[in-house]
Each structure stands twice: as C-alpha cells, then as structure tokens.
Amino acid sequence: MTTTTDHGLAGHSPRLSEGLPETSPNRRRFSWNFAIRIVLLLIAAALTLGPVLWTLSTSLRSPSESFKLPPSFFPWNPDFTSYGEVFQQLNIFLLVLNSALVTGLIAVGQMVSAAMAGYAFAHLKFRGRGALFSIVLATMMVPMQVTIVPVFMLIRGMGLSDTLLALILPAIPTAFGTFLMRQYFMGLPAELAEAASIDGASPWRTFRSVYAPLAMPGMAIVGILAFNFHWNEFFRPLILTISEQNFTLPLGLVSLQGNLGTGSISVVLAGVVLSMIPALVVFMFGQRVLQDGLTAGTGK
Amino acid sequence: MSTITRRMAGESGKRQSGKGVAGEPTTPDPNAPPQHQPTAKSRQSQRWLAWIFLAPTILGMGLFTLIPIVASMVLAFFRWDIISAPTFVGFDNFSEVVQDPTVRVSFLNTILFVVVAVALQLGLALALAIMVQEKMPAWLRVFFRSAFFFPLILSAASVSIFMRYLFNEQFGVVNWFLSLVGIPAVPWLTTPGGSAAVVILVYVWQNFGFSFLLFIGGLASIPVETYEAASIDGATGWRKHLYVTLPLLSPTTLVASVMAIINALQVFDQPYVLTRGGPGDSTRTAVMVIFESAFQRLEFGQASAVGVLLTLIIMAITAAQFRLSKRFVFYQ
Image (cartoon, rainbow over all chains, first blue to last red; front, side):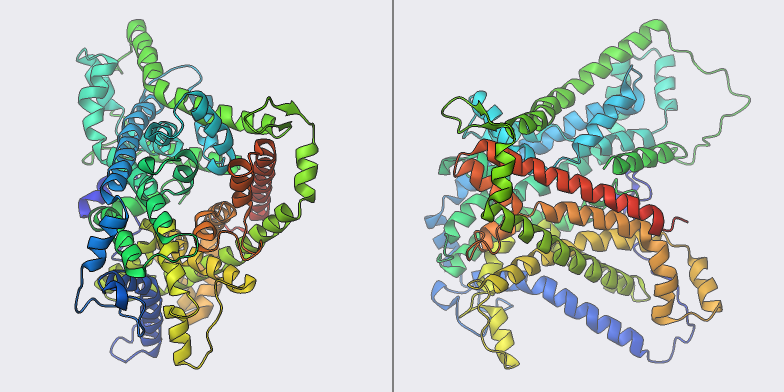
C-alpha cells in the first residue's frame, strides 16, 4: 500500500503516521483529555460502521427472524437462506453482468481517453492548448442533473435508448480524469521526451514506450475512481434504462425493496451485501489511491 | 466558479517543477550540451498526435456536455412533450415554475437541506479530523480514518435501502435503541419532520468522510512550528485550535464547504429511495422535480427551466463564497 503514495500527485498524501505534535510533554500521567477523545472517536466509528455491520448480520439471519429485536450486529449463527432467496427473486447474475459491463467499459474508456488527452495537454505543443484545457475544466462545474434531459434526447436520437451503451458512452469523456492525468504527466520530467526525440523517436513512439508505461499508476487512480462512482450510480440508470434486462445492481435492489419497503428484509439486505463486495475489494486494496484521487484537485 | 478552475490551473503550474525521478537535479546544468531543438517536422507531428489524442475527449464532451448545456438553456424557453413539435413559449416555463407550489416547496426544502446537512457535515468532519490528528497510536489513527472514509465507497441507493429499515417505526433498530433510554417510538418516515431528519442524517452519515479527508489534509499541512510558538505563548487545548488551527485551516474550509454545498444542492438518491419525496412534498428536492417533470410528466421545457434555475443558484452561491473568502480566509 505504501507504494501507492508514489504516484506523483505530490501534496495529496496527508502524512498518515504523523499527527499533530505533542504540545505537552507530560507523557506518563493518565490523560483525561486523551481518554475522552478516544471514547468520542470510538462512538463515531461505531455509528459509522454499525449500520453496515447490522446489514451484514441481518442478511445472515433467516428471513422469518430478520425483523426480530434485539438487533444483531455480529453473525454468530449465519443462515444463508436469504442469499438463496435473493437469487430467485432477482436475476442477480444479469444485474451483476450489466453493472460489471457498464462499469468496466466506462473505467477502461476513461483510463485510455483521459491518458491520451492528459498527455496532449501536458507534453504536446499545439495552438489553443490553454484555452481548450480551461473549457475542459469548466465542464466539471456543471451538474450532470442539469444536462440529463438533452442527454436523454440525444441518446434517443442516436437510437440507443434503453441500451447499456446509453449508460456507457456519455460517461467516457472525463474532465476530472483528464485533469488528473495531465497532472500526472506533468510530474514526469520533460527531459525524457527530449532524450527520446534525440534518439529519433516519433512523438507517438515517445508516448507509447516512454511515458505511457510510467503513467500506469495515474491511470489506475482514474480507473478506480470511475469504477467506484459508476458501480454505485443510481440517477443515470434510473433515467436511461427502461426494461429490467438493462437494469444495473442499485436499480434492481431498489425495485426489490419496493415502493413501500415491503420486500423481505434479510433478502433485500443479502442483495445489498452482494452489491457491496466489489466496493469492499477496492476499499481493501486501493483505499489510499481512492482517497488521494477523491481529494485531488481540491487545491490542497 | 471560475475561481476553482483558476486554483486548479495554478496548482498544476506549481507541481510542474521539481518532481524529477530518483532525485535527478531539475536545475539546468551549465555544462550540459545545448537543448535539442525540435525540427519543423517533429513539431508538425506533435500537433497531429495532439489532436488525435484529444479527439475522443473533446468530441465526447462536446456531444454529451457542451451541446446539452446549450440545449438545456434553449429548451427552457420551449414547451415540448417529445411527441408533438416543440413550441416557443418565452419565459412561460420560468413563470409557471416559480408559481408552482411544488417547485417552490422543493427549492425551499433543498436550501434548508443544504444549510443543515452542510453545517452538520463540516462541523462533524472538522471535530473528528482534529481529534484524529492529535497524538494516538498509528494503528488506531489508521482505523479511525478507514472507518470514517468507509461509507463513501457505498452506493447512496444501497445505503438508503438499509437505512430505511433501520429507521422503521415499529421494528427499526434506531427506535429500539431509543426505547432503551425511554424515548417512545419516533414516526421517522411517516411525518414531514421525521422524513426530513432521516434524509439529512443518512446523507451526512455517508458524506462527512469526504470533508473529513479534506480537513485531515489541511491539518497535516499546518507547520509544526506554529503550534510550538502558540504553546510557548501559553495556548492550550481548545484555545490552540481556536486561534491557530481554524485560521490556518480556512483555505481548506472554503474548498470543503464549496464542494459540500454543490454536492448537497444536487441531492437525489437518498430522498428518492427513502421517501420518494414524501410525505406530501416534505422531502422533495430540486433535482427530484427535474426528474419528475421530465420523465414522469414529459414536460421537458419546464424540467429544463428548473435545471437552469438550479445552475444559477449553484453559480451564485459559489461566486458569493469566493467573494467572502477574500475577506475571511487567511492564506499563509
């Protein structure tokens, strides 16, 4: 995990291991201040993690016991009935396949297009570079909810309504990813390009063999951010997909819970837990990358 | 809004220099051979490559962002239900929207939501960040940071699904805990006040971690010497934070509040899944109105008008915030 800090977004890695300095040197005395602080933090952590633990352990209760109180926060006697049930009530395989296809293609598309555009903005010289980059940044400020109506009509006009492509195509051009990749490429020395061109390499060769391999960690950030965002996305799929065969996971789960929240608790929660697995994997292996990427470009 | 853009551009300029690999000196060596001059041919091929590389992003953004922005503004002046041809109606959509009680209530709801949720989110995040950054074992700090960050990786829809069960009046866990301390069952999702509270709590629960991360980064960049100087002057405990941390943290606070406000203004997933805007219109938000008038009532012109109004509000708030910041933010 420590290697992930070495991705060139310098200044975005808060120094984890160093806290604020000690201001009082009396170390041996029991400190009420310290105790109260830790207790408050533990309460906050319990309130943050508690609902997720409850979700996990309730999904592992049998459907008939799932609403019984007192609540359970740890699955002492796991019962997997609900997991079997959710596969019967919901076409989980199709939902996962749709979500994976949409998220995966968006992530790959963003990684490639952002790397190319970011490289052009960082290392290639052409007229109008500054102005074009400002336009790209400015598009970040417009909320997606405001453009959704024209996007919906555009998709319809292209004959793509109610297809997975309707979700994928508009999400590939990424202002934030382009910004991130430009930063990354600027962190790589320009001398590499000079050396390569003295050796007679074409600009394409210089990108392909010199810069692109060095930019893999930056592309990983773009990919992980895209994956996390689009795996969890609800608003666009709600509007751009109509038939159930094109639903993504969040949409399927909301429809399973139903308008009145009448779906069997443990079964719905089993689906929720299943949908969290990829996010959990990202959390375990790419937490640092995700944190740095999320706070990148906040002017810190 | 352009200020954010400029800040970002400024940042990038700073980072451009001094990031060599493996400690390579970045200052030019006076004995080095003269710089390689690119030939006209290589400059031309650079231009070609640049436009090929930019093509997917620029074309995609033009098609899916820039054209829709313009189209949205144009559409706000038309009446269109997609089936018949659009007719120009001038400012009718705006005047109808402004007079529509549902739209009014939902804008009021949105503003109220933003004020309360952002205040809670920033206050909680700042307090926790200060507590986490003070002296404690490293593993404990890692645990707290991960715990507070965790809700951010979940989907707002999934979170709202399980929160709806947790806040259920009869068999919800929240009311069960409240009953332990003698508080009678709260009708969370069936009363206007209760629903608004749940939407705010669920939103803050999921999003405070983002502000927390920003504050952690801001705190880490405050130089150690400032605290040493303050403690020599006799500042301790909360005074230290009041007179040192808060002023020095103000640039971070500004960025964190701008981002929190812009995100909160666009809230949709939580109220949609938790309450569907109800009971009545009590938790209907601006984006829910856009969604409903466009995709349930097929009033695309009115939906666009609401969208334009929302964008104007977002721009005005951002501009105001940066104007204020010139007076109150302390840059080192």
